[in-house]
Image (cartoon, rainbow, N blue to C red; front, side, top):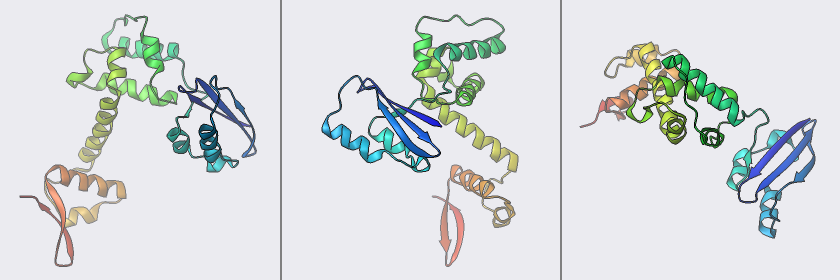
Length: 207
């Protein structure tokens, strides 16, 4: 049996879907506010009897967000942050009354997702990531996500040792699509653009 809990701030409650053997068996409306005809219609349009066909983006589009059963509560998130802080600085983090509520707002469904963001936050030396505190983590979560992605890309670029220019030979030496994409991204960062010379595709630096 699988259970999905879809919550809505606007409707002040949740919709619980119960699936057995991949088929919707029941659902419970726990919204505090009554549904109007339009809201009922929208929910019916996105409901799927087949679990494999569930489209979470469709639910999100009508204001319903998944509440993961294994999502960490605020207290656990605070504890994780405090542990990371102590490992980084050697002293305890001073928790404020609002920290738990702030962390609860983060739309990170899985434990590992939150842990990754905390690790990235303490590794980040950008001005907006200092000083280290829970309020800063929450308020700068979007910048942190972008920084984490960029850092990963930079690591991959360094790993493959791309030349600072276009080389057809180096491009052909790429063993995976990931490596090719990383090389192209490296070229774009240097100001190169993909172009054609006759029927041959190449990369040239923009003027």
